[in-house]
Image 1 (spheres, rainbow, N blue to C red):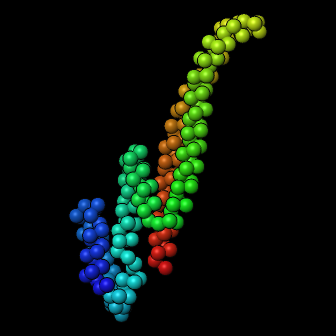
Image 2 (cartoon, rainbow, N blue to C red):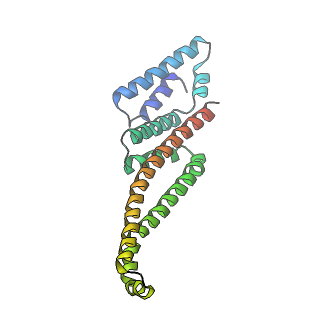
Image 3 (tube, helix red, strand yellow):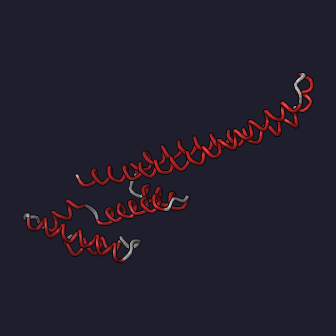
Length: 188
């Protein structure tokens, strides 16, 4: 593959970007070719050193989607970033999906217990209404206890929301690190 073929193939695989971004990337790669030629390398050697243009485009797309997810956090942008990383190879299937499933499971587990803390006091209040009277505890103490647990659950929902945002940012950082790791490994 020569310089022209490489640049054309790269351009064909960068369709997800704007014209300005594509032009900047192609300009950078043209400069890279020119600098390498000045050092006495042939087009084939340069192409071999750079790698597959399709893979380069996938890395650029994944990086772009991660930046979009960081700038405009939403479930959709987050999932697109993860899917783009998974498209980079089997390595990512293990090192991205594993931690992602763990984090998702931990967050859902926490959410379950928080919701239990919010709604359980009401259920307990009605089910065990007679139980408080049998223990000699005034009914209003039971109501205050139930209300306290519910308020605690609502507070935990707020904490959980911030925790989800923090974990979202943490996973995006991990994905960026993952891309840099793959890029370094590919360029060697």
